[in-house]
Image (tube, rainbow, N blue to C red; front, side, top):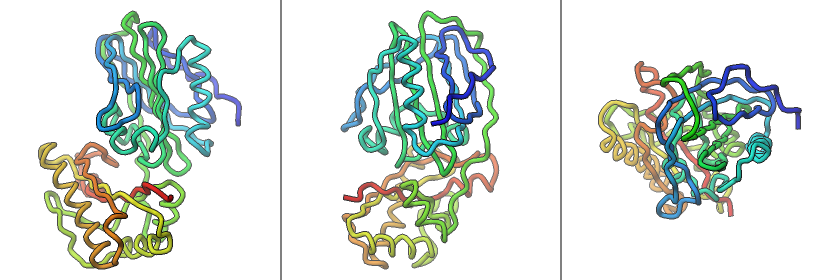
Length: 301
């Protein structure tokens, strides 16, 4: 493992955990609030999420990391630093052991493009020192790692609420030729050729190149199961968009089962509405990119 990079030079609010990012890192987001709250997971999701809510000065920072091949390579040195600073790890998990999809959408995460979470590759750590808490969320997309740290300290002094942000563009969805390679490498991929108009759940055609490739992959790997996750843009209310996004995933599943003959029991569907955008929703191009269906490998056993 490469040596830890030097601490970033931006001043930290008093009480915030001081962590040196491993490998090469660029801070893209900082937010400090003198009095706020943060929900902290204390065990895996199993129907509900065991958690505590800590109140106090809340500092959130996000980095993009290059050079790491796994999320553990990023998290392990951060855990070591927290222990050296007197924090006690309370809960740690990775992807499916956390509760997978359900865990990810129960915890506090800054939306994309600042923070990106791959549903098939993420790690979470919660640590405590006295009344102070730190959570660390790590994920990857291709060669780029994402790290979100949140510090809550009721005894810390933080300046009035402030934030800075300079995110890189969100990861581009894979082209159809890249689809299976991306799916095998990362456990997830965007079915980029499935197009939905705002408010629509219907697919216009009976076949798509992305579904051709996905069906062939599933036929060649009969033990693999997947989840199709539907997404919407931010127009309309949360409840309606959750239902629309689920029906979009159901539309893709129907084609895979009815047209391609994939067993229904191998495909779960979920809808997350507008809560996991790829990019901003204030342009038509951004809204179009956010209206999508993603495939996530859920088991290879």
